[in-house]
Amino acid sequence: MSGPTDEDVKILHSMGYAQELARRMGGFSNFAISFSIICVLAGGITSFPLAMGTGGGFEATIGWVVGGFFALVVAACLGQIGSAYPTAGGLYHWSSILGGRGWGWATAWINLLGLIFVVASVNVGVWQLFRDLVLAGVFHVDVTNWTSVTTDPLPTGMTADQAAAINAQAYYVQILAVSLITISQALINHLGIRLTTILTDFSGYLIFVVAVILTATFLIWGAGWDFSRITTFVNNTGDPGGNYVPEARPVLIAFLVGLLYPLYTITGFDASAHTSEETQNARVSVPRGMIHSVFWSLVFGFVMAVSFVMASPDLAATAKDGAAGWFNLFTNLKAPGTLKDILAIGIVISNYLCALAGLTSTSRMIFAFARDGGLPASSVWKGVSPTWRTPVAAIWLGAVLSVAATLYSPAFAALAAGCALFLYVSYAMPIAAGLFAEGKSWTEFGPFRLGIWSKPLGVIAVLGVLVLMYAGIQPPFDILINYAIGLLVLLAVLWFGIESRRFKGPPVGAEIAKRASEIAQAEKAVGQNT
Image (cartoon, rainbow, N blue to C red; front, side, top):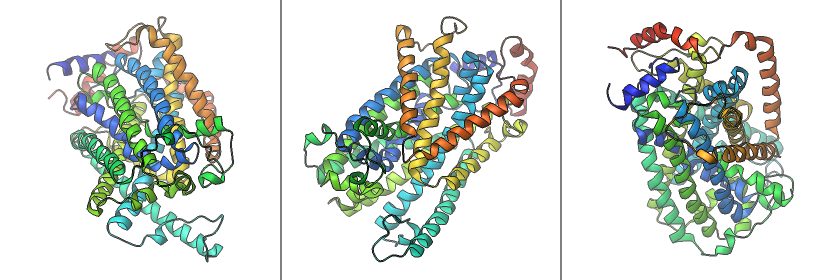
């Protein structure tokens, strides 16, 4: 190895870790994996009904900008920490160093839950988009029995038993489809970071191209150019929004809940940090990858959302349509059929690659946490294949857990809200720790520094996440309260009952020097020194 890679390995060794993973990602690849997970063609489409069901066109556009700039603040704060500590553990490792073992251990579990929700929610979206846009739209397959129906009220002429039977069938078909999709993504991850990088690099270009063409298509064949639509807030909670938010709520609450639209979409950018040990010149590439992925998603997503709002024949009807709102817009668009078919296929592929990148990030988090003994049977989950140089067991564990998440909560909206809530909470934890540690126990920094803006932006990030937590437990997402309470109780019992005495956290001080022989053996086992 030569150039920045030598320095990368030296830095990794200084933190007590071996270079077991293959360091083959360049700066663009590190950006592309986060940009692929954000994927404005995923949440920017599947969560569009949430924006319309809360604040209408204003929420979908201006709300996108507000949420996007907040995500940019969070990415900048995390980028500063990632520049100092470029490890696969990312958030967990940072929280442990800056806030202590317990804080880092809790961050790991919350981040892991959020990452599992990323893969689960996007793969549910992959199936639904494939079903509605490709099977039904391109190949004209009858997917009626694979699509759940509302039961309150029942469709005209349908009995409660018939609706229950259709919903049960749709549920099991979705489980099978999501399982097959996830297995294929795990297999691609299994076969090495080179293949995954090729696909996520391609995904980065694909998202740019499809987003531009999709936006142009909506503007050319649908836009009415009524700009008042993006400056007028309409409270659509309750019946006006198709009961997407079932109860009518005050304007402020409606706006805050609607921010889950951009914040569910613009999340997962910690993938740049989780692949630090596979990235060259990581101290520079990681913060740049996170910030650039958020910025360009903010720009492309805003223009795309404007095109959706402008192309809607009737904003009230689009809001009333709920989950079917965007699909109806796309289906009724007077664009050439071949163009729409190509766009539909491009959207589905982009979503598939989004979840692929999400599983990559999840597996690296599992690997890093297990490497420090944070998981049950850690010796299994920290293993790296000498052939593929990937954390194979961690990849398949992440795949199984993400499918399992869809069994308990098959509703896309709940999975999406859970993804945004748990990930942003895990983002805030190392930022909060850094606010107290900066200039005290935290004195080593990387090339990327926020300078005098460090603490003000950190305060904005933490306060913003507290607001997001409040929005994230409003109906219909109140199912997340069960997740949150259960998780907090479980973490408290495990930490004070067992882990506070057993879990050592990442190596620090003299422990790093003691690992020298272990590092050499680990690198030899995967052929790093051969």
